[in-house]
Image 1: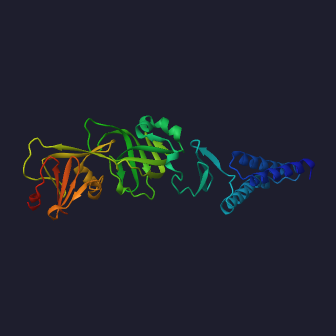
Image 2: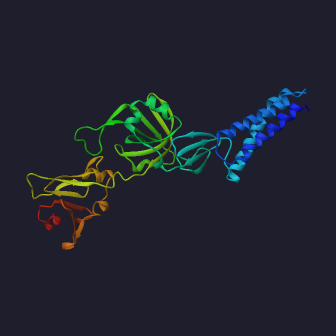
Length: 338
């Protein structure tokens, strides 16, 4: 073996070993390994007895062998891998991609995802929140900017496609819109593919925040995969607005299922982001009976339950009859007998 062959062979072996010794994330580890494999290959190219098939197969075999060793040491010894390329999303979040797995760097915490099955593994708080109107204003530009990145998008659900996906579109608020209703732009939309997520708790016109990987675009429709829905408190806090009737009748009026009103035109729940009629909110599941009475004062006269707020009262006659009353009206318990 020539001296030059020995030098290239020795350097190749050293450079192949160095990345396995360095326990850090760095693209330079992969570059050093590639150079080492190239030098190892070169030592055989310089040989007088060259075998073309062997020379063609050698780098492939070395890559397969070193990747196998890298894979095993990563999962058995919890060491930093070599065969990864970094997709830096922001200063605190990076995703290191390999062939059969990826690793999330979440503010210096590393989380493994085998076979690319998991959704975003970091805290959604580490991502900038993007309004869907801004994201979809120029979808081609947004896709180019965020392609293969994880993004956090807040907007309104425009459609739910069974258990397969949900859609968010650009929207504008109409004057005096109620119950979350908005005008959707039919041209640009965002599709979030649902994997292991049950969308039954969400409805069209709901505000929602999702985190997903920007995967593809077609006809101004951007698709996100690996979706995670961020549970928020948008509909936990509200203020109550009561509209009384100009002319009060002694008769009860049906309001919604098991609810009646007397001297009340309507009751609104203002969530800040949206304003809902109480009747709609009860049907839509934005609020439940138990949630509604949480912060009320309670009395139990005449074997009934009377819940009182500053602006209205609720007389619970039985499970089938609840009467909403103006706070300015005297409580007539005989209404429960009607």
